[in-house]
Image (cartoon, one colour):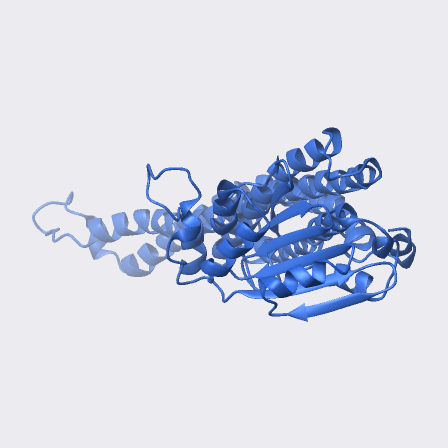
Length: 408
């Protein structure tokens, strides 16, 4: 994780600071993106879009349309964010959670609005999720994003082109559409991770390159980031489906059941891929261990071969005088003593190699042992089981068919 991403999860206030929403009044994070406002207002017969609106302009637009989506990108301008909160009478604690981008996904009900915090899937080119905070009130959805770029363009296009039923519904249906788009955006991310793990699996089994360890750790970190975003979200969506809210109609809560199903599917995929990455890590470590064992085995065999040869060379390298005693190595005076000594060494070496071969100690160093092969087969079976799921879910959610769009 890069330096900016690590710092994002730090608290914006000192420990023990009073919980009065004062974080909105503090100096903005230097790494925060500039604040930009996009207003999308619509009704059954018309739609308007505006960028960079002031609060009086927003108030005037809301008076002319039944539904208004106020999307604030970037949290650098805390003065404007505080003014927005005062205009809509948002609770200071909710505003503090909005600018403190380390919040756990949650849904809270207030007298005049519902407050929803979620995490959006990382866009291509980024590696971390970002927080999005939404305030659902009568006739308006107010959203705050950490940075520009999101996966909500499909919702904007549906509003612009009047596809489906969204232009005929109230603000609660817009909130549902945003939640659904945020959840569906996780499926392509999981699919890309599945493709990466498929490639890493082949490389791990084939050669066990050293750089694979860093890539496996990177995938595990990203899967953990997705898990942190999705597990609390399941509880949030489930509570929104079960609990009565004056801002979510009964018909819209029925649509939220579909979001709950998608969250559960996404959690299943993430857990499957996390287990798959763990098994890949085991295969990698087994491959490295086996390779090291093969190297040590070759070195040991070479050492064992030279031990008796060194013994013979050491004996006949000693200085003895055969004229003093016939026990002083009579072989030194043999006519063919030197060739016979070399021949004896050769026979000993061949006998050792034959013995090692029959014991199976001279197997190819490029092959994994039976345990590693079984582990690789298990990983392959898990990947084949999990692979159809992201493709099917992505086709059904991240890139919905025309029939599904028309139904919405």
